[in-house]
Image (cartoon, rainbow, N blue to C red; front, side, top):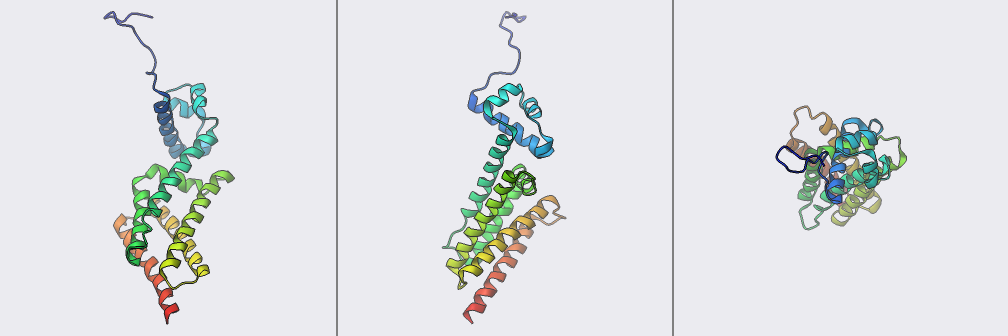
Length: 211
């Protein structure tokens, strides 16, 4: 090993990280690449370069680009789902419950930009497995919303399921539009508007059923 000018060993290359730390570093590099270039525009070579490793080292951690992307996407989906379902509290007043759901969704979109962009771009992916991850998220949230609506309002199950899918779809499309083109609408304004539309729309059906 070539001595340094001060007599200490000279080390070339990047420092060797523990496997878990290296893996997290590569996940971060891959996420940045996928967000910037999309799935098709990202290669394992570019991820390895960004992560400061050789491609063989990258393959020691991940079998393929598809597996790597799926791991990142599934983590983003779980994070969004966990945030939203965590606030579905039946002890809250109905209006507060709707607001909490809308707030959780928009807060995630606003604060987790990389994860949000991955979810939105995956929704139009040509890869069926990638596309199905986002579809499963929407169906899962719709079922959660439907069960919550049915348990707190005088609405039959089929109608509650319809409303659940409607609420999930509205949150998805409205938040995506706001994320990509807010046009000066603040997060609080978006939350307030969608909460009112969601709550008073559902509440009007409940009132019709009771009359």
